Image (cartoon, rainbow, N blue to C red; front, top):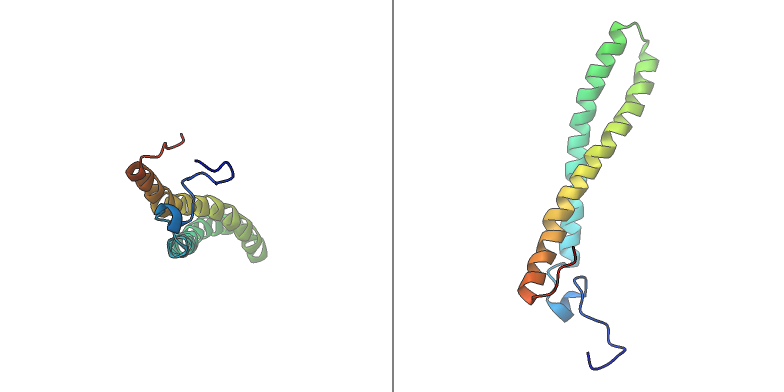
Length: 112
């Protein structure tokens, strides 16, 4: 850098400056796939947990209001790890992998 006020080239510089593969379209695609995966997988995980929990509570003599209340709480907590796993999967696939590949091509030092 000849100019001390010039910003250094980093992995997250805008695409026009460094050939960075991450664009707004890539970020939107990552978010959309995450949203769909988390919604669908969370829905099915909620169904499975709700059926099992509702069956157990019904067999123990719980009333419908209790089953609904506790199923809602349990569904919320089951949705947290489902959302996290989907988020990690999408970010690794659509953001981290292209950035690392681009850094290797540009021979930048990849932070550990």
